[in-house]
Length: 185
Image 1 (cartoon, helix red, strand yellow):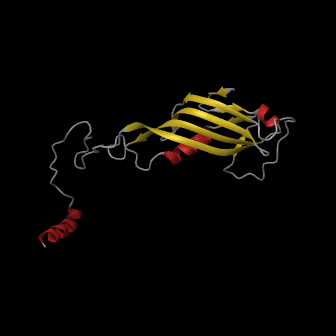
Image 2 (image 1 turned 120 degrees about the horizontal axis):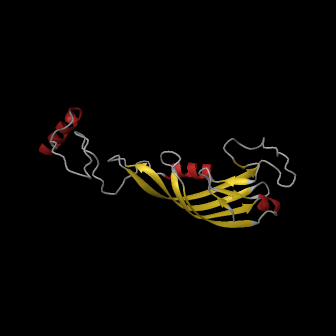
Image 3 (image 1 turned 180 degrees about the vertical axis):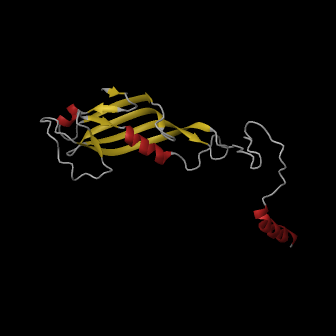
């Protein structure tokens, strides 16, 4: 196994696997710390990566435990969100492994993953995409996050504020009046 961690990537040299018949496989353990590439991107990856030779390329099945840096939807604090990522994608070579000649890639879609001219299969972009999809829509730093005070903006997880909690937004007044009518009847 040769796992390279450089320029914030997770790469596998698959030149030998591309020379083998379909069905040939490799399994790798991954334990990498990566600087965050962007908001919500994974900065750690631990797990296994299975590479299986297909008739057209290499099928990748990766099961990774990751962390993404998120902002809490209630208090806006940054926190590491644990994620379980399962990547299942086929990667296609762009260069023939024996002759070094460029392969016809016109049948590939723009979204397809490719293996570069040095026969390096780079999981970084797939991991980034799967991480974005796996991050909860409204991440919480903790289940019982108190959020921020709507009046003064104090993080209520860190300290209480002295704002009058009975003050209501005037835009809600008609609904509160309806509620009070319901309670009286």
